[in-house]
Image (cartoon, rainbow over all chains, first blue to last red; front, side, top):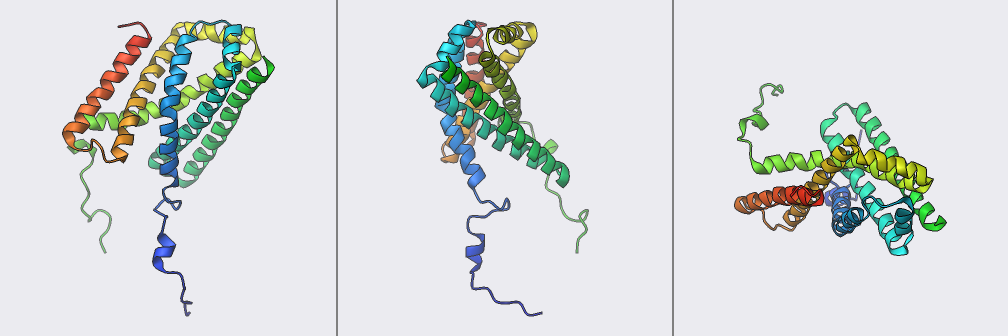
Length: 130
Length: 125
């Protein structure tokens, strides 16, 4: 059987794609979220420390302040994204059974989506309802 | 063609002398996975607060108890170590601090930061 010659050059076919088939996107987003999280975590830890032992009213009033709510939402997005990317690498490194790997990754993705949305919903509910 | 057993194998982990940089490398993973589990607590805390004063009080009660305190102190340390070591990794990505003496020094700095911050935040210092 004769193979049709391709007009695509070899470099065109491999550019941007490593062994993971999606290039450096995963690596890059992991770093972007890390850079974003560094200052956010300083703020978050400092806030949690200053909120230690606070009453329900005190806590919800703190969450409902616009600046706090927005920073919390950004933090949650970056945290859950960074967490998913990190766990994905760990699973890909240590789980070698293909069906089990796929199942684990799908469950982890869903868990991050569901829990991340739940956390965002909680912040919005406190912020908009208080 | 060689069968897999005929091919030379690269030396595995156990032939190397265990080093600080190796310890931090694996701890970065361990703390990362630990912190992912910690997100469960963060979600529970926010949902409890959104639910109302009763659930929030239950949550505070759990966190003030022995299990809650142990988890919080453990997560504080994991976060401090992953945070400091993560910044170390970001500098390495910019090709800064990659030679051995610098990598060892920054490694000790990561340990010091994690221990001192955890102790300071929990009033153990």
